[in-house]
Length: 243
Length: 156
Image (cartoon, each protein chain N blue to C red):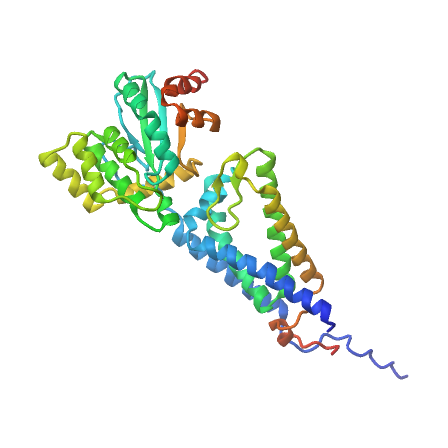
């Protein structure tokens, strides 16, 4: 009894084992991705900031001794961001008054991602210097002086600007020397990185962002603040009542 | 191979592969920005968003390179089209929830002004790339592909 001849080309052709190749390639891609992830991901923030700084990159508090019922205002800003400059130059006087009157508890997080966009290091240097200024108790005045002379986006800050702002805020002698060396040494560079991580973790992905009593203020309210700083008290009061 | 399918296949590989390599390449040099872009969608907890932000560019570059050199075209096209569908879903959900963000498809995303969103264009682009991926999944055999060396065309 003779068997019919096998049909041609029904058997798989002798070639490379595609499935094996695909498996190896997929495994290599996954391995690279996991290795990069483990290498790049931010460790839990542990750097120590100034005495006025919250742990874990939580930001720098202006008036930690504010009363319990003070409205908590947290501003996330980048010294190189034009809209941050607009906001600061609009509301800085009102913020200073509200802090002096113990009506608000102010916290600042200085972010730095414009450095990579603009290809310089001004945001990081300014943020470090800002934390340095909080050691001398002049951060509120210092940072508004710096924003007043904000260069056009991308031009960057000089150290001279930071020192001048410190002098304007009343530093001299050994205090000024301490500030200058803190600035030059990049004493708080690690804390500045932690602030960036903590801000992203908190869901803050752009600057300026203003959080009042835990709630991000609306774009409309942000525009109002930028246009007319005298609205500061009434805008933040809205968020205070909703608590 | 007929000229038209050959041209379409090459075009689909260049489009999907090229865009994936470009998008992944821009993200991989600033992974912090990539993570921020994912966080801005407000869909995942931070650890998951961080994982996606860091690993996605590597997957994009890998799949893009495979398509460009023509290795494992069918599975690569499937993964590429799958990524595009996920991106479309993400962008659509941001649009539907009234967020005003840049898709972050090519690096630094995050909030933009209300009149600066480009959701329709972003989705249209990704639909086109999904179609390119589907076409390659159905007809993975194209000229100038390493696949042809692994499995010589037995009909020609």
